[in-house]
Image 1 (tube, rainbow, N blue to C red):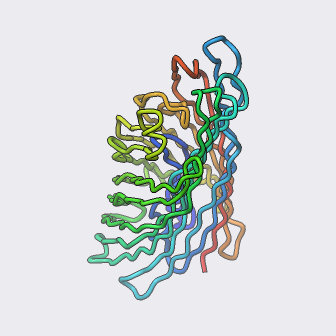
Image 2: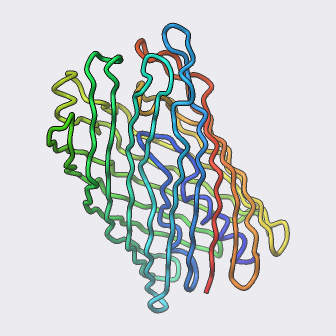
Image 3: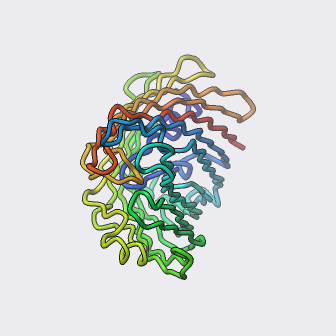
Length: 351
């Protein structure tokens, strides 16, 4: 079984295949730190939503979410036989609704982030390693509520705010191609300066702490089984711009539930150059309605093919189909049978 096929199958799938839980975007995770030697990767996601509903009068709302792109990347190298470093970047949180029709026509918002992480890994023994490091996180928010929706027009525009957090974890590798890792990512408390209805404003915004348990093991000469459990503490996180909250008497959104997301998948080596990847992802429906994210829970199926071009280069195209849970609101209407398709292309190079 070749390292360039089976092991890398697992490492590929976890740059984030779904768009769910809270304001979760497409996070990269820490998987590049486990690559051998000097390694670089660049991944781009084309996000194509199909999220629409009917207003209380039965009129179609049109597609509520604009097409999005998301890019992540990594560079990793070994300092010596026991210690390695990696630089990672991703977009862990993102939302971008835009209501083109219905009673909320003209309502739009943007919630976007960018993380840069420096992570080191130290091998205590050949089987056990510790890893961790700091990350910077930029976050910016914009929104517009039309007057016909609430009787008051409202706008928000913020500057990017950069704050810092940390990631720590450990990994156990008892046999070739077998690994269990546990990763903790800290919460980040932002203080975002901007304007609300033309007035200076400061928004205190927290992004959640999270824990990820990942595992992989070969079950045959050509097949690798992998899975993960991801938990994020969204409970109590709120989006509460002060002018908005004072004007309308409540925050934009207060999250009532944490995110727990499960992934189970496998990689099958077709030949020395090609490996087929498949995974199923599940997250329970449990969040209340928000016009910023009118979906709850997800069932997703990912299918991809990793191809070894030669000379250290690999390309992996992947398609992920996300099926969201149904939601309803007496003001915004019914949102059912919604989905999102994510097309992903990853290129990597092993020096």
